[in-house]
Amino acid sequence: MTLPFDFPQEFVDTVIDQVQDCPNTLKSCSLVARIWLPRSRTHLYRIIVISPTE
Image (cartoon, rainbow, N blue to C red; front, side):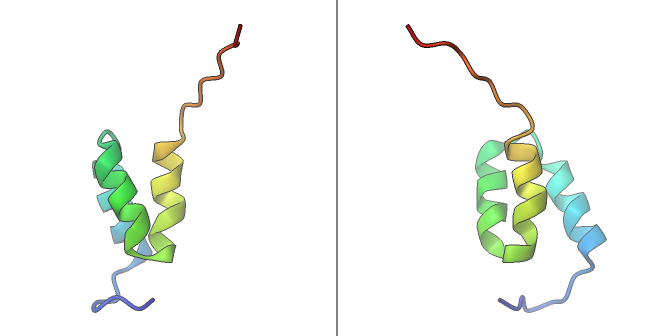
């Protein structure tokens, strides 16, 4: 997918880093373009909690 503007990846990473505490925004960013997914995923899954089931 080609965006209307070819933003440098560093710019995109900075924008995604700024919204790292907003999961809904990160989910939206991950759907914008394939190149946005890895950085969004890094913040979405930075903490994974596994709890025992009983």
